[in-house]
Length: 117
Image 1 (cartoon, rainbow, N blue to C red):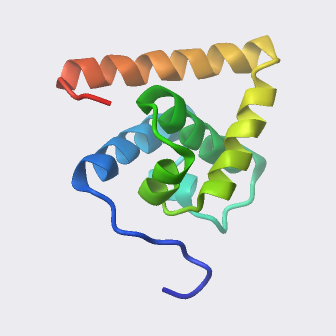
Image 2 (image 1 turned 60 degrees about the vertical axis):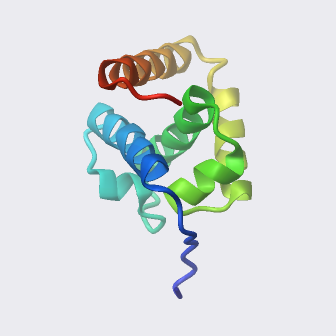
Image 3 (image 1 turned 45 degrees about the horizontal axis):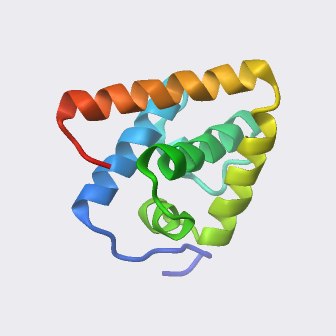
């Protein structure tokens, strides 16, 4: 591994669903999916997008923090801290509306694909 990477084997279905949420968040933030998951990217908009992706996977899919971490190459502590930040940010009506829209879009995509969480 090296370079502080966190990797664990996850199933194909989890990788696909994680990829979907990352693609959606990347599109909504005019970023590449690679940028969203790149731990070296520290710009505020990238950090926000990464936190949002973790949060959406956790809430929309009903995944545990550990499962989100495994699917997105992070540990559960990192994912948990990110989800806590997003929860706190949801006190802002604009941020809350943005998260709601993304969650609804993700759920619509899952329904359209006939996928289960």
